Amino acid sequence: MEEKDYKIVIGIFDTISKAVRDGISNNSKGDKPLGVGIYTDEYCKEHLFTTPMKPLEHRMEIAQGFSGVAFTFPVDSMHQADMEKVADEAYKAYMEEQQKSEKSKKYKVGFLIGSFDLFHTGHLENIYMAKEMCEYLYAVVKTDERIWDRKHKQPIQNTTERAEILNALDPVKGVVFYDIDSTRADVIKDIITQFEADFPGQTLKESEMAAIFGEDLKNKEEQRKADGDWGEVSVVITPRPKEKMKTVSSSAYQKKIKEQGGLESAEMSEERSLKTEADGLELE
Image 1 (tube, helix red, strand yellow):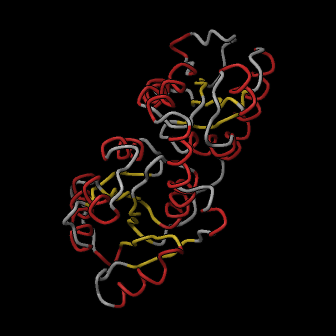
Image 2: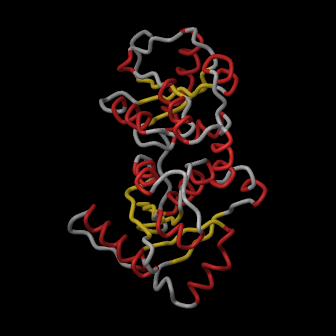
Image 3: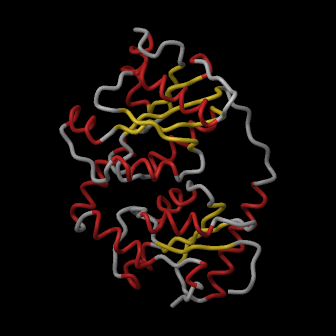
């Protein structure tokens, strides 16, 4: 590939293994923006002999969310001219978007609470909506022990894996944990402590914070706010269509990945497909 004003990484970007995260991180260093090429569903089936559990548009959205990723583009041909054309167009659109100014933020800090198991576009959409409202966004990850205690379910990805994925996302400033015995007051305190560690010399008040939830939790969390459980922290509700949740949800993907041989099998497919600048992008 001829010298460009950007770098690229190419892969499936379905389960997001450690090798994939490292590929993004290592190649995002330097002055050039990083573009990520995502194999189409058809290319995966015909040439990589694997079937992604998430459709192309969802995998592109997830890749776009990672820190260091400037733009994404679909890959359905390994002919260099075809791929360069699509990558060039995506890079041009990215540069135009960079000219736009960021919207003003209502809250200093916002936070989302969840399991975030088998990270998907529903999670990402909520993260982007939340980031539009606040200067800094934190993710509160329910630990394996808390999930088991409350729902008697074992996550597909463990606490550390789920936290690492969230920490790698560009809109997420940091991650704190919702332990088995944590209260909402503990969550607020932990976020304030983390924020003040991230920004020495700055302070954060509860009144400058927002707890952000999908609309499926609207009644429950608004009642908790009325009961005083959230103190001075605002409770904000984002839209979460029920029809979409039937197919774009952690439970739906947990079912799919079990049917396809489990997490280890999916991650092996990811790692075999990954091509980076360090590999010299030796395309087929």
